[in-house]
Image (cartoon, rainbow, N blue to C red):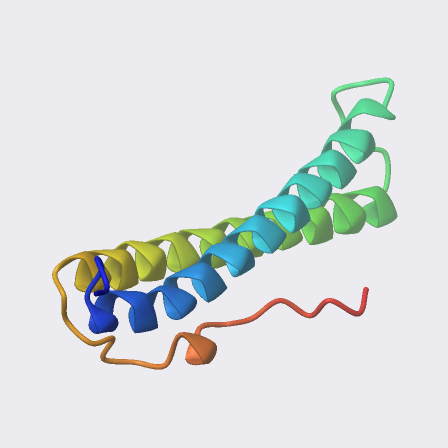
Length: 105
């Protein structure tokens, strides 16, 4: 006799998939922050020396912001899927539709 309801068991593959995306995106976000910090720390003054330096900083800041937004969305999805699974509801959306990480880079 199973202890856990079938719906809960079947939902948790989706919760696990979203959690895996969060782990990957967290690492990507950390890497993006390290890149941004490296650019900021290599400057000897507070002033931006050139248009190239400004563009590089803006690009890295944009990359970091996008990673943070992606992570926030994945964490909200995790909360939704987890709450639905705990409530015994079938997941309304396919967790595979949540943005999955590109593991090729």
